[in-house]
Length: 207
Image (tube, rainbow, N blue to C red):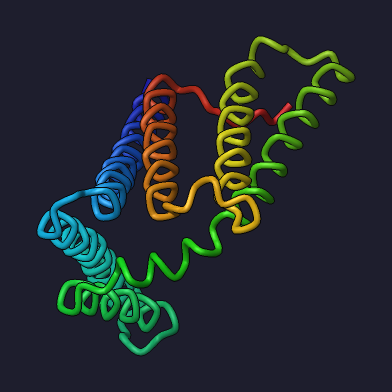
């Protein structure tokens, strides 16, 4: 009984962390779409600043907690772990004060189409491999349906969006919007994962 309660508490903690991450991803995804597609310049500017503030505050909280926890545990503040947390804290302060996250994102998203094509292919291939080995080993296919379906959907969406956004194809040139859509899809995936965690289930198809 005690072991079961501990497991439930652990699942709840993991689920809450997952949901918080999902909310952050969802907010940033929506703001990325607004930042590129809003017709009003003020709305674009406000969305861009909001992205910097959200990420900056998250980095500040994570970096501060990392420093405090490691300082209490290690009784030192000049270790590799605390310095890494300090760098995260500095990044958070930079994002909040300078509000330049969108500029950095715009530089990164030019590379995103190529990443999407490769990752999409890998995810689809992974789903096929899981299915093939599941059939060969005569595993419980019902347990594989959910992770396979999710992997295939994510892989296909990533592959299609990546191909359409490639410079040689140039069907989609709003890469920041694509980045936002992917963040929203990933946020929904995380939210679903949190629900499964509460239920004591996992998306990992270990078999």
